Length: 485
Image 1 (cartoon, rainbow, N blue to C red):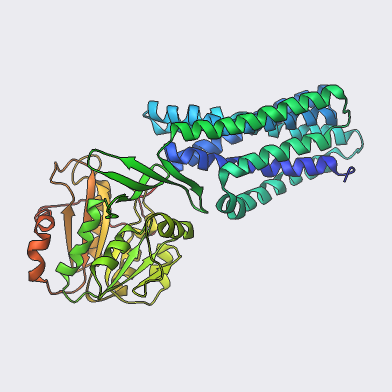
Image 2 (spheres, rainbow, N blue to C red; image 1 turned 45 degrees about the horizontal axis):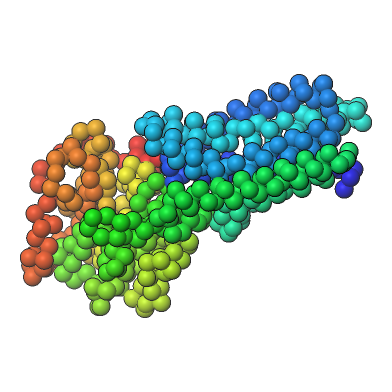
């Protein structure tokens, strides 16, 4: 092992460096989201930090290249990694609230929290090349081997972090583990270990432990409403208890978006737009089977199963952790015979599943941060084909009817008109047409029979139908989808 000490350090540094990129996305997501803007900011800042690290590291290595310097670098990297939990609460949360421009906020947060550890880790490779060059003459081969090891480490770190560690142990625990690994690497790398070194290392380790504990304390103090902070393979998820003047709600937050919420006392779903989904029984009196794409907290399926004893519902939810949270926090009974859950991507389900339904509900959109693959002509054609005769599709879209925030509904309305035999729009709020709100877009196949006996029950929703609406947008396709993040 001693012979390949430098190679192991380079490999692990590469793994941790790339892992920081994935950690950064999870740390920032509850405050600035996880859109392309945020990912671009993270990737750009970390790459810029690494570039400077390679350059400065190379210059420093030419002056003083020895393994003990690398040991110090690793210890310094551990120190700044231990600061991440504190910086999340004291810096990221504050900046996100103060800066209105998402790009600027994301860039500044990435710089303050992640640029320094990324810079420090990047300095290790040039030091390794310089030290090994004293032993080997073939500099090109040596440089290629070190670069390759660092890159392989990055690949392993990416897959291990994204597929195994983040969904199973969470970002907070990973941060602790990374700090410990860096400290351990530093100790192993060190050759000159005198009393001063041990004292310094012990003081720094104690400081890191205190910083990590302080970070946890500050987070809990500043976020007393967070009941659960967990990571899945897809998202960072918060379950919160939020008190309003009307009631206290248990909420499910993914990134910055409120995905589901229920009244803590009654268990009733809080989102008014979900009640529009019940229009399916008015629009098609023969409807018995329903498909919901996008489960989140499963508040609508829970409501559906309580209200309709003679109907069935299938739910497609890509994130298995969401289903687990719905069971543990929101009262979902996944063993109900009328409920079937598919842990699968929504578009994949539309493409390949051969089930037939009377109603399809699409609730996978987060404002304009929509998975474009569910908005296209091809996807909606598959949805129509999955409907029984006279079936309906109801989709929740956050948009305005007119003005600068109206593109989403206009694109989707044009696409629905191209696919379905009839299309309707309902407004959640009786507000101005330029106001952004939940709009329920309905696509109808054939001529379903309306249940007139349900008119009074749904009158207030039916009265909010948009009777005049025009669009000049073109149809959204898999090749042309100006929607999404």
